[in-house]
Length: 320
Image (cartoon, rainbow, N blue to C red; front, top):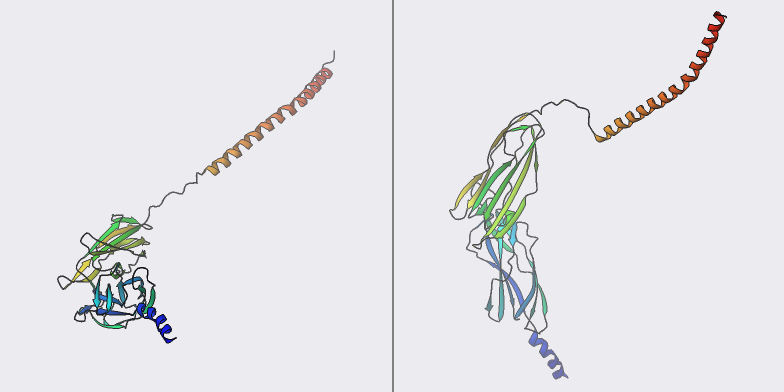
């Protein structure tokens, strides 16, 4: 009986899979606000086939985390086969920041046609010391950043009630679009400012670099007469190639706003009014025609009576 029990347990022991998950990073690297560093997720198992990997890291609000599209490479560690995934991590502020535990779920089997075993693991949290450039808080770190400004319509005299639109386009390399900061607006007395939601996009260029774009638009509505200037604004950023802090500036734009010209008030010339005028005119002409017909019939009878009475009066005065 005992031999039979051990015989039944033998396949389970043969196909039992051990697995664990760890997070690793380069502890010698100096970490700065908004500057990318890599965290490796290592899925280790005694199986041979890994599938259905899902990683939940969205509860880490102090970082922007970019997941890889596929595994970076495979390796072995003793009895374990290891699949390595490299995540790009961007800290959003300085200080001692904690990368909270990720929730990792996946399936592992011993090979093709073998049963899958499901795993759910929580690697230990990681703590990072994040620095900032002295004298600055959040400073975008990138090897290249460009900024362009345009205005539409491009003229220097407007009327009260007109509006002008300013478009600022940022492009940065090796940073996600979420990291590009918004340039704050300055209130200008006499103008009302309306800001649109920014348009964010990113793509991989021909050199394999991530290029992020942010398009910021504002509309300035002119409510009073006067001379106005939309001032320059400055964006500071850290050049990871030169190791210097650089700045980009928007364009300044000056213009005048005048009162709209006074126009003479003219009666509206709408089709509806024309139709009413034509209707009234037709009814008036019809009424005149009817009165004319009635008046033409009635006076003829009276004239005959008058003629008859007149002839009698003449006969009485001049008897034969």
